[in-house]
Length: 137
Image (cartoon, rainbow, N blue to C red; front, side):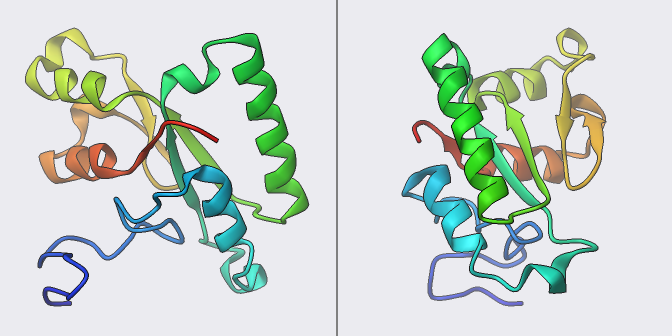
C-alpha cells in the first residue's frame, strides 16, 4: 500500500489487526472499543486482536483501577473479545531502545503474543511506541 492522503507514509503498516492506526484514536480507549464493537466480530474470531496501550498513570490509583475494571466490563458488554493491553509509557520504551541492557526484562504484548521489548527489531519497537498511549478514559 502506497502513501495515503491521511498522512500514512509508505511502507508504514495500515494498522495492527483490528486496532486503530497509530494516532487516529484521539477520543480515548472508550471510543476505540465502541468503534471496534461495530465490526462483525465473528469474522475476526481467529485473529481480530485489539491492541491498546495505556499510560501507567491511568491505573496508578485506586480510582484508576476501578475505572479500568469498568472499562473491562464495557469491553465484555460490547463483545470485543480479544483485547490486550500494554501499560507502559512512550518514555520508558524509548529509554529501552537507547539502553537495552537496562531493560532486558521489559515484557510487552505485540499481537497475540508476548515478547521482550529489547529483543524485537527496531521496526517492531517503533510500532509499539507509535501506538497511541491512551491518557484518559
